[in-house]
Image (cartoon, rainbow, N blue to C red; front, side, top):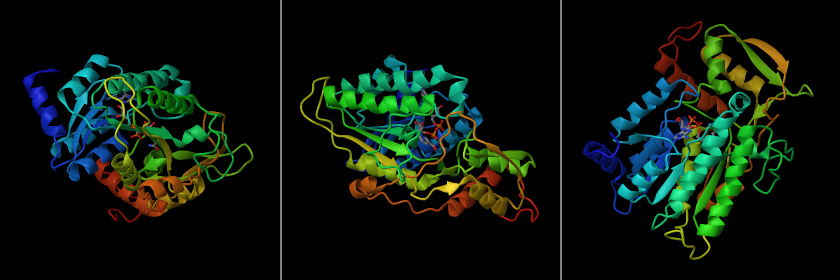
Amino acid sequence: GRGGAAWEKQVHRSAKPDRPGGMTVLVTGAAGFIGAHCSLALKKRGEGVLGLDNFNDYYDPSLKRARQALLSKHEIFIVEGDLNDKPLLIKLFDVVPFTHVLHLAAQAGVRYAMQNPQSYVASNVAGFVNLLEVCKDVNPQPAIVWASSSSVYGLNTENPFSELHRTDQPASLYAATKKAGEEIAHTYNHIYGLSLTGLRFFTVYGPWGRPDMAYFFFTKDILQGKTIDVYQTQEDKEVARDFTYIDDVVKGCVGALDTAEKSTGSGGKKRGPAQLRVYNLGNTSPVPVGKLVAILEGLLNVKAKKHVIRMPRNGDVPFTHANVSLANRDFGYKPTTDLAAGLRKFVKWYVGYYGVQLGAKKGNN
Ligand code: NAD
């Protein structure tokens, strides 16, 4: 049970850094795609890592359990709980001297927001506020790096997206809650001196990825011979995404943690200015969805059955394209994996994880 001796022992073992002066990081959303990868990378570097995740069923929870099992092999423990559970968060900060928080827990997905709007408000707004309310009272305050999203650029058409561009036209409730998170972060930085770094991720993909994302369900459907929907814009242009490989994103997250300034506040009192930073973490080369499908066809050895349709107004934006010069300047962020190379690694993982066979030349991976 929570708070028992065995629980505390696991928490301490997981959170203790293996190197002198190492960070002690609370990773929220650690059973998620990006959270699991970041937790492993931090642990391998000798940092202390403790996860928090509510294992919700937005997508197949068995995939979250499999990531948890992988992390547990590396002595990373995930506390099962919700961001909105304030007593739990207070307890975690009481027992562990966290130096950093990597806050990745959120309700993700653009289209699902139309069916389940309140889950976005609960996790991305209320849950984030709850976390910040706890962090502001910790002494010394942890530095916080959190996941924003390229979706904040919404219907912005200036290309590529720079952090200075407008973000006042969110096209989905998901985007609106991510934008709200940025405003909320600004307030907590201003009032309490919390150190806060927001990362605007651009369509992150790779092994252990999310089944609700197009590259993932395209792979599944193409292998099963099902017809896939390929969207065009209302103007019959191809939809394009700045697909970013997970290993590049992990390096960006670690770089942001490494360069995060220590908070200047403590015990809820502000002492002086601390950082509020926001960065794009993209790949800088958007790829049309048709090209994504063509790469997958090649890797899977199967010709896809395609159904080309106009994009409904469901929250998707026509294209994303990151300018990453700010992240490059401040922590050397430089994406190095192109879509074909990254998808090759994803397909290799997919085939092994689900034990499926590729088309034509079977077993040829
Ligand atoms: P994910 O859904 O795989 O991971 C999020 C994890 O958070 C899940 O395991 C979920 O169970 C957990 N969670 C959700 N609500 C919670 C709550 N209230 N309390 C505790 N745990 C909760 O998603 P991901 O792709 O790893 O995304 C990580 C972060 O990056 C999210 O904030 C997401 O919005 C953001 N992001 C992701 C992408 C992308 O392309 N993957 C793009 C932009 C932004």
